[in-house]
Image (cartoon, rainbow, N blue to C red; front, top):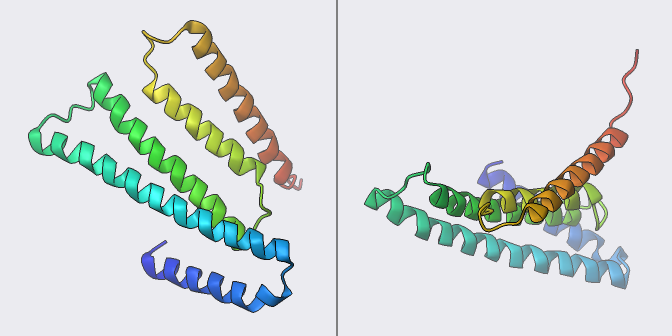
Length: 162
């Protein structure tokens, strides 16, 4: 989605909110304001995280110190990238709520964000300093969340016609 499409969707969202504001209950208005506030805060977090990512990567690239095969560099770099991706997924779920496509809580989105967070944990995990029980717990959690996500996805997909 390019910047013009994003601007157009944002304008549509604000226009729709303005049209239906009088029809909304007090709680719906409150919910709408909270969604806009959270969206703004998360946008700031994404910008800050992206700025800090650039602050870490650019000196490494310019100085020739970026070695993605170095495990420590890989962990830091992709840990920071995952942080930005997780924040973007939060932002996306809030925007989807604001556009009234979904209810306030979407289980699939929460599961996806949890899976992203655990994936990030696996990327930055120092296996020498982490107990095997912790790795097993994270693995079990990943399998459990993945299974629930898969089951939810299957239940929302209409059955195939013979």
